Length: 152
Image (tube, rainbow, N blue to C red):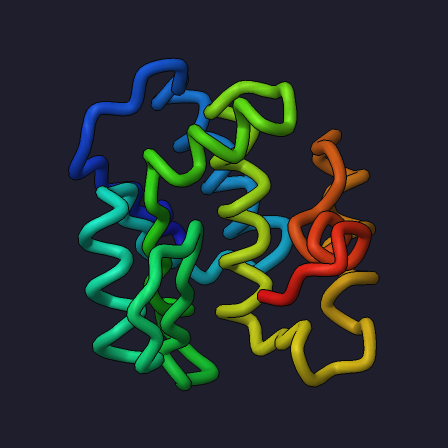
């Protein structure tokens, strides 16, 4: 497919190079997802919290949510990223919001592809580490939570 992944920016994103992030999303689509597009909405903590409650029954904020299409053809599905949450994480980890969005996009696309770090005995963590290294990203999201003892 020649469709580009669609990034929707619903909030201001200081510190983010939007054209470069769009290119990164295209690279994820081409190299990781076999050319299948996806849609990612970069939005507020409030919107992601509402989605988390509506779809997962969890009334709490989170950084990234993925909604696979469930189809083996066409678009992979949708991703929602809470930019303020991601910006706080980036600050705590000592890197840019732009870099944090890339880590979250990679994590979200892996979920769209069917990976599930809560139930796959490390399969997603290994895939995320491999792709993280290929794209020159810092520690993967699943690697972070594993080291900190947190769950996602």
